[in-house]
Picture 1 (cartoon, helix red, strand yellow):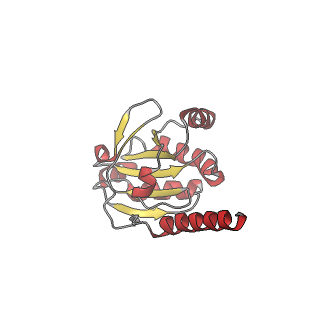
Picture 2 (cartoon, one colour):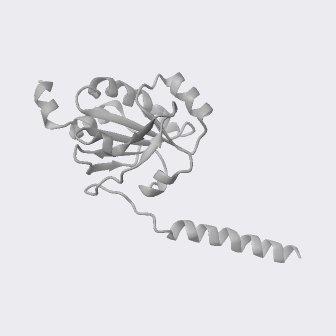
Length: 174
């Protein structure tokens, strides 16, 4: 009986792993149009990616339990303060966590950019994301300029934001 139960268990685990590795999840890469989405923020406001056309979007997927995510958040916040009025917006998508956990983290880190809640990880799947953090640089036309699959330093965040900053703001940058 134990062997039958163990065999059945192993079959189910194998099947689930097979399904996860072979599912038709599109991987969004540089050169692709960023899939549009609408998610709610912690405060309940709905944010849609297409509303940001005309601006660069620094789209970051993260979670509170992710150490590299935690390390890069102060850098993202610092550069957001410099670029938010210069044509670059930050959208930080928390994946699969509850509001209380995320709110506490956001408050502790002093994050002022929109934090979107992907509770069922649907956007994570739509963008084909595995391990986090992952950041997408999206230009003013909604096209993915780059996909970064690692934690970022402050100079990197700054350089990436400059990369998606629309020309009209670059000229006034001096």
